[in-house]
Image (cartoon, rainbow, N blue to C red):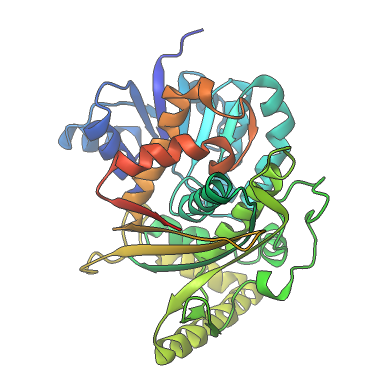
Length: 405
């Protein structure tokens, strides 16, 4: 039957959740929107102050009936409340049970792996579950898709490999930090980070989960010079999730007859810098971070202390970055040697995420019948592909796309 709301924003009082509500209010003011929070009253007041037209309902992920109450009333859920490994699954599971499509902004590979357990039911019941619709992992996934599509249409070649550099400079919100530190000592997170193909389809004939990565597919943990880009590759925590999602897209696509990806597709992604000294400092900092993780794992009480000291959920850590940006370049190579480059530049990562996840939800709301799959747990490239690419090219000044051959 008809549902009361077009979109439900779960985690509406969080930092990204409020940006999503702002973006919907400005760009799609006619939608019927409900926002949720554990603290419904304070969210109600905040929305009133910001003149945002949305209803408010309480939602506590620990209480299934409060989750079901919201989910059953919505056509689409945009989940913005992390850590997803703690509170995301109940929401996605409720979506599949209530025939409500689901998108989120996670960057946690272990959570995405867990979502795959819903795939069979989602496919059978025609529900789309699409995680990682923010700057984790849309830029990497869609730009690689754009490279594959262009190679096919211009040169009739499949995408053999994609080398990607992803530079970012923006502040981190309290929620993101919590997720990052919370994943310490979570065995599922560790397994996902150790397996480059953890999200691939289990029946992938070439690279099922557990496949040993080739040297160029290994995660970049220290500085390495890249001759193709003429930059130093450096670690970037975003790239761990991105690379696994892009490989999942290739794995899902390669099951199709007319796949644009080669079955032996090779994907490499990392941060980058032109400066040798910055590369050295970043590598040292990253190794320090890994050592810190080990220490937190050995001393759980220290981890609890650090979590208590973090900024509140809903706050950005630093707002003093004058020109926040993200820049991503994909160099794709076809199986016949043709080359293609796609790139994307965006401003603040959280604002860009609000645009990306909302436009993903709009694909479900406005273009549902034209989508290539009508159900299942998918990636943005496999679920939305071309349609989302077209939306984003005109969505916002926040995001700029380029394709050069």
